[in-house]
Length: 270
Length: 306
Image (cartoon, rainbow over all chains, first blue to last red; front, side, top):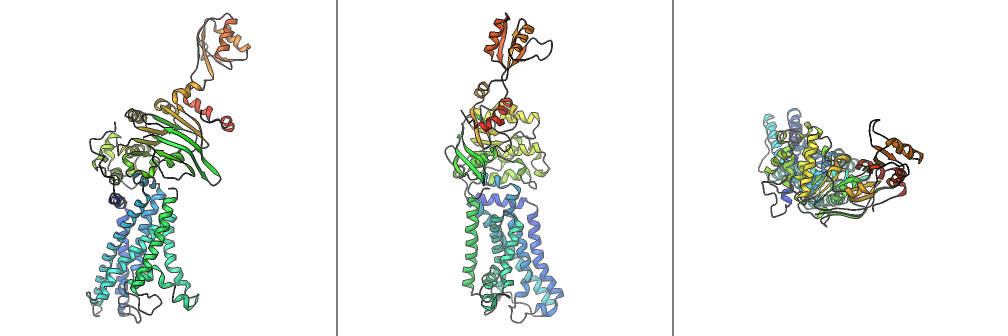
């Protein structure tokens, strides 16, 4: 009675690519996904445009002691955390809604499900971040032109490094962390709040905990590591690390949170 | 592939939701999984399909835990909670992402939508579906991969009589094809009509695991139906012996006797010179059996499966 005219029994079992495709379909079937992506772009480029239009020469020109490219990335933090909210919801919503039952009966390997979601988060985050970076650059160049200031050299290696790495890697890394934290909390809001606290509390605490703390701990936070990796931190400043160590730091963060989230996802009842 | 549950235990702190449960749902049969609210049916089914981890014991399908299935959609069909289908997704998209995960052709989604009677609603958002439509969608998900084993939790909730009959016929045909069908339901009458076997649990413990007919015959009905040549005389004689006698109405010829065995009725009739034409225990229906089994007395005495 339920026999099919189609061959539903193919020979090879599905690999992780099948799980990735199904998760991708689920992600874009939800109307809020493109809305949040647009919000992410609007927040970052819109903030940059505001500074460019209303900030005047002092805002656009390179502030003393900071990277000359900081200007074009002022709005990135807003966009990055908007994207983190999307990725946290991508994971947290399946528990809140009960969809986890469908997900885990379609793919019995919880590792495969987690990895598939993380791969999507990483690729989408980096791609969207790169586009947003280019958009920010265009907005900034327009502002510089309008103000009669010299344009940024788009082929300068340091600018290319910042464009290619900062927002893209930021959305990718913070998006991954938010998604993995959502496994622990099973709630998007709690995951994003935790992420914000992880990124900001140690920095806030630096003013109370002495210089040795201030010169060691804040530079190890994900946001600082990303700035170091993108060349936006000035050598000798409190947030600076050589890019090699910054890369190791980010990999350590991601590996640690991934390990915990994988253990929790596999051991805990769905 | 049969479903085997062996010494399954699930505790939540001090609460023992499933308590040393053991049963088998064989292939080629429809097994009804019955119990009052909070008995542990859904918890058991969730452990069978790997959503929850047992505290101890094991649940397997065809001798394997669910986590060992590399393509579970094609081997085990599941309907747990139709209400948890994503409301903002269309029905077709919901089936298609599941089909993608299982490497099933996309067209199969439309095929099962037609099978369950939702072909015209495939493009609609699930949030606009009635309860009955969500149930049909859930059944569509369960049969998407043409699986050999099917677990359905309350499959007829919200369905109209035509839908209930369709589900009943579907389960029967699947079992006749050799598939394993495990259904949990509160509708005793429906379960009685379709289940070859029943597993009855209460407070997480097994009460009965046996063929439906055997269960119905082992638990005697409270009444004995009697037809004789002098109902009035027999009725008075039985009441003198402490039996309770009733008729369906004053014109009815059959007596329904409670409180004495059929053998005793025969002896009393003989002593009263009454000729018995019909003497038969009234078969209890599954609801009566269920109520007896799960009564407080049975639970306190801890009666378990025979």
